[in-house]
Length: 144
Image (cartoon, rainbow, N blue to C red; front, side):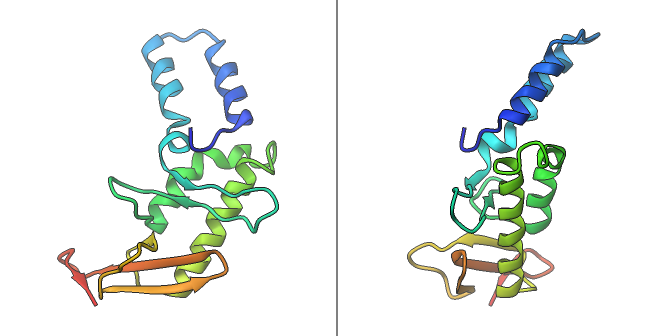
């Protein structure tokens, strides 16, 4: 896992210990609830640092603001139980969203900076490090 949460694990164990009419549904929940933590947390906040998180959305390493917010919404309920774990991850994502919007309020997605960025990417150094944005027109073609 790229990020683990004891609060989520405890909640899953409580759910798995109850009886289920459909055991396949229990298996689905067991596989799906930690999925974002397993597969899409690209940059997790470290203790002592300003909270920062980068949640990959989709099949490439981009972060779309709406999608990343939706991906972490099932974990909001665990933030008060685990303020230095899930809570810090959520604060980090909010910080990253703010930095991203300040970089380019009209961008569709954001990526952590690669060594050589195409000319249609804006690059900025923020308090959270280098990020770049990509804009798409209505036909999903990249624009400058």
